[in-house]
Image 1 (tube, rainbow, N blue to C red):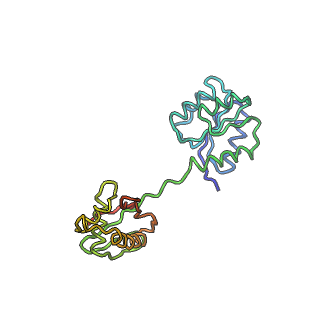
Image 2: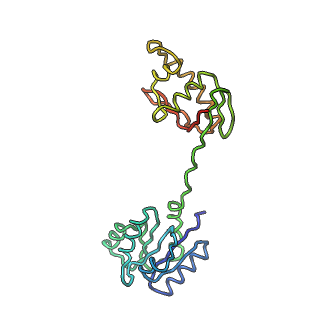
Image 3: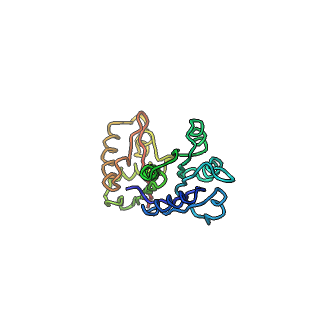
Length: 230
């Protein structure tokens, strides 16, 4: 089911505006009807809309100009143009001015609701869940994630600390080996990979994030979850 939206209908035809607002409210949306573009500033009362339904042939400022203003002020808002202008050049101008959907009149209720549902998935997309910062207790050798608290080997804590404080949380193979106290001529990628595989499994167990520690081909590894060092 698409989310419910705050919708402003800008239509100068009184009965059509009233019918449209009633239709939207009946389907769970919060709709406000306005008779002209100027009323968007004067009568909306600072109301924040998720979507505008705009007629192009408005008295005073027309729908094209209004759409441009709205789009400049809020790039993410939804705009549906509903108009008697059906020529190709009219549609091109409508889309160029910021319309997401251009519907020639007359528009049936089902078509209008379908267009709103299609836009609702964008304008009301859920916000990404912020990543949880996991504490790494360096003394106790413990990593505490949202799913589990795990004991780490001393070398694993060393690797995690080095990755956490590195720019972009990424390090080359030689830097990781250096963090483990190995000399450059002792570089052993196979041994390092074994340590990383074991460490990755533990981080995934603690965080639930399958991409928590990724390989950078030909370079090294990157930590992709935030840690706090204790």
